[in-house]
Length: 244
Image (cartoon, rainbow, N blue to C red; front, side, top):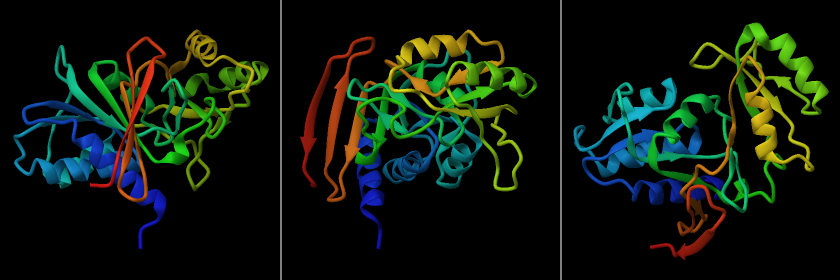
């Protein structure tokens, strides 16, 4: 029997897929909820040519191909109608932390070239402030790691190298490493994001600020709540949809 969390993720993923129409170019996220969305997309669009996709990770690309979706590389001037992804944390203003699956650079790249970023989550991902539930990952150049560790410790961000079960560094699809940071409650995420981007050797951060257009929160009974934002603004509206 599936858990309440699994049922919530499934409800959110299926509702997110409802934003996709035939002929759209779609960006695919990475993670457990994004994987459910990929399966739901293939179910809704069984013809491989109905939509075209670009995936944010090798794992998502392989999964989408197994489900029969059309997946290809980025094109020059690419723009996506919809991106469907999950999140590690969702703040009240719909700012996010992402990157638990290690695909934060590609996810953010695709999100910035998408007209509507749809985030599907279960209720456990809702937080009062970013950093209160999950670490904030950053993707870094391996050569820079010793210097970055020292700088980040001095900044009070408690960096930890993400490792594999065997104990070695966890390597991204881009050949880089990930440091997981702790964001102190008193620190402003936007200021921290700027500070991190100023450090040579930091490729990207898992702070997705002002990027989400729609957050869909699934419930165990199959219903969902939708929260809408306007890019660059903190305005948020909310609606609930019962289990059909």
